[in-house]
Image 1: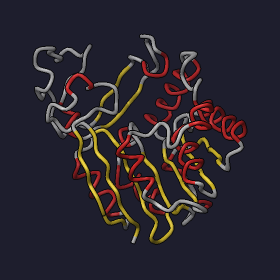
Image 2: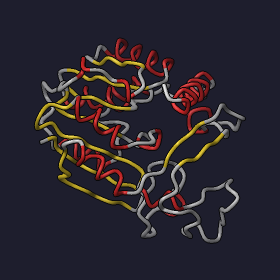
Image 3: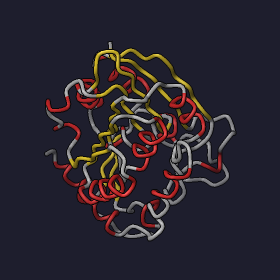
Length: 265
């Protein structure tokens, strides 16, 4: 396992061990009672328009499993398989699948190491906010994803827009509260490290183990998909935040999030 991935595994498991009591507390109730919970309206609409009954869905970087569980239940899918590097999050997700009696299984694995057991298994692949940044090589990442897709399978990527990589967020040295949309970093910056924890899980500031992530321009995302045997069939861009870092500039004209759809040829 690459050193940075091993470090991220430890940092994510630390964050989940120190999660706030509210994190994941409403997961089972919302999935039982709501239709497509944990998806923003535009992504939910894309998924509603797909015929998922009886299909197999894969999610790469599934976190605590809430989105895959939501989609399998709401779409009446035959099975969902989720992958994440954090063993404690995967154990939590498997526990929720059992609690909800849903046909989902979750595996703790480095995405790069997913083997041929999953070759051509998935009718739909789901990738959501905060997944792509944990991989240094998107060609390699999407080649694994494509391997697991059936011919003709579709992929939905709902992610932070690459343009946000140029913005500074509150707490960073270059952050200017009077000019939140000013670009402070290169669009092509690549590697970042942080020991500032994972606030959205823990709801507290702490000195964490080291997270290492990577920014990718749109060209790397699209070319990574295409070089792996996919075609891009749709791209929608939105000026609202889905990562929790840029909500103060929602609907101000700056691209903050996106949905990319593709198909394996």
